[in-house]
Image (cartoon, rainbow, N blue to C red):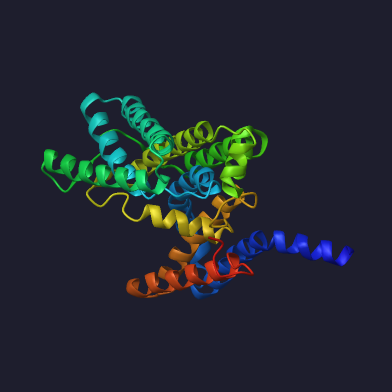
Length: 319
């Protein structure tokens, strides 16, 4: 009986163990292949700058994925927010006003994703597809309006580009996310919805309310991530934000996040997965792997993680 309990505990934590093992393996392998360049001061700075955006987005997305949902409009939202932040800041000279504008838009989109889908009886993925199309069109229109391929920020954002600011931002968002996820009803009920939405509803959980709150927190994270991406790149254009929706999903899975959400979801998945994904991408480049091959290798790693972490007795995927 004791052995059976130990096996159940090991199985329950297998995803976390594999995610930590994957991060350690990436560090060891790419440290060797890159001949130590992975840990150079310059490259560590690059890793933190890249991981900052991914980690902030992933910590917001964890609340959505915990419910068994996903949001594919993330990349398009990030692109539009970066452009708007630059245009408003350049026009008014106030970065605060630029950020407040994109934060307000992010909150509105969170309401649309969480509330409209419930009221219309639509899966959340449908509303995110709608928003993705809208934001993709707005992004193109904004660039046509300014009649250029990209816009640069004229405000000095060097204080946000510093490693100290980015590490602080990750830490602050992580503390807030952990508190909300582990010690409030928001985290408890989003996991319950992911485990069994109908059972949660019958137990008296206001599914609509917690969906909206989860998407609102995600929206805040998207706005903050867009601010740091703007500081990092100093410009934005038609391609800004492309691929982030898929990258965040891959990062969460690399961190041990179950596709179906539920009670096995952890905030640590967002942090471990984000750093693993960034190190994987950066390490392959430092090791001299051709860019075209990098995407193939990451796709194979993604497939392997799904097969290992998401397999069930009755089939490959949980749903």
